[in-house]
Length: 639
Figure 1 (cartoon, one colour):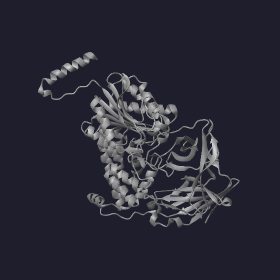
Figure 2 (cartoon, rainbow, N blue to C red):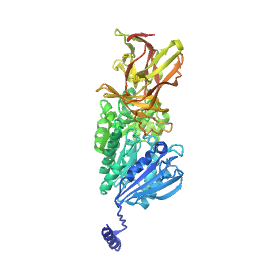
Figure 3 (spheres, rainbow, N blue to C red):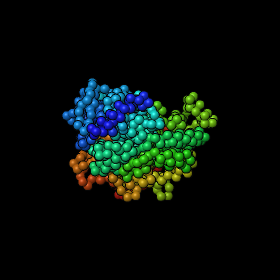
Figure 4 (cartoon, helix red, strand yellow):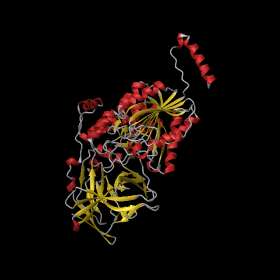
């Protein structure tokens, strides 16, 4: 190594004696990783950041590889190194870990803090190849990543990230300055993130789905870097993906995992295809607003991430490739999106219950919330989709939107058919010859409804109360004729035969996912439950805590273990009220045989209501269907 350095110095001296050589900077450091480590509650409550630091420190790095780390954003650090009252910078290399800089705490969710770290690392520890990695919670395209626990869970949005990176490394499409950008966070493998970093790095590593608490396996991919310091961003990214999935398999959190490696130098064609996709969708919507209902049903049946239910909150992130495939029958441009994704997604790993993940997500307004849409409009890519969703959620466009329509030779907009101008809550129910309750909207249902399911209640007239059991889509739907019938079988979801409240969170062709709110050892969680249509089996995948008010997704997927105490949660209201209150029901101690499945409903009366919703977030409810269950027999009546 000393001889090589001496030779390089001699070359430099010789070069500097000739003005034709210009300014030359040579550095023996082959790799530098700039690690933005915002500990947040993940570190305070679980020590997850410390675990990853210890994994990294189990790897002996060779000379020429530096890891520069900034720590902050946590109320408590579960180790003897970090001081929660300080913003600290650390260097880990062949000589071990050492503190190299510290200051008073600063907001890790602020663009200036990110810029100062990147600038410091770039000036003091440059390298031939550089990766910038983020560690923390993530919330998807709208809320970003790095939620600082000390500073009100403020996070870095995509605009702030762009500002910080561009101030250190001016965007360069021809020669991106960084080898790799990575997010050891939830939900950040999105087309919007790829658009932000396409001119800063060659590769992006991120997850579409919520990451489990074990996160990336630092002892795995750091070891790959240590053994091959000449590795490029592509192969390092593949190592991150493979070791992450292997780590998840080792602890049993792999069934819903995703991680993808995107070649950012090939993202430009994807963005072009995505814009064409949006333009075609907007043109169809302007021609016939019934398009919105059909597009919404495709989005509902496309793989989506982070929950997207009333119980868990809405990330509004859907798999881009799956959405394109689901809509290709009406949008020919969807094929261009799929082709471009195939070109730029270099590698991906995923669990069996994330089998449709194509590598990048995109925004879709599942909840029709204008505030969330405003957040997307501020940071998202794809101008056509911004106008499409604005039209769909608000029913109108401003002057800029009208100008955009003009550029597409679209002359004006039509009123969108929604439940707000339909009196479908009063449509009569009938009972067919098979005893099934039937709702008939006619062909117009296809033009209005984004989806339809049902909610089920146990009716306790003696005590003047009703208990909500949850929602499902187990109905027979004839969309062409707008006829919907129940498939009530007198059973419901249960843990060890204890009936639970459950909410449908994803309806797929191969499996459905459900969210079951419980108290787990006294804390609020949502059990993630799957029904596999092929195996005809139920399974509990784990427990998570969903989104909080800041839009931050819980990173921990808790796996049940023997001795855990599950308290089922019911929603109860008086018979003449729709104001449900949560209360604790049964207490279950987890054993090695604990399982989820269907259990017979106890004898009594049950009320089922068809629940309809549209693209603008409006809901309508049918008259109730009453099922009287006695000794395994079911009698159906309607009002």
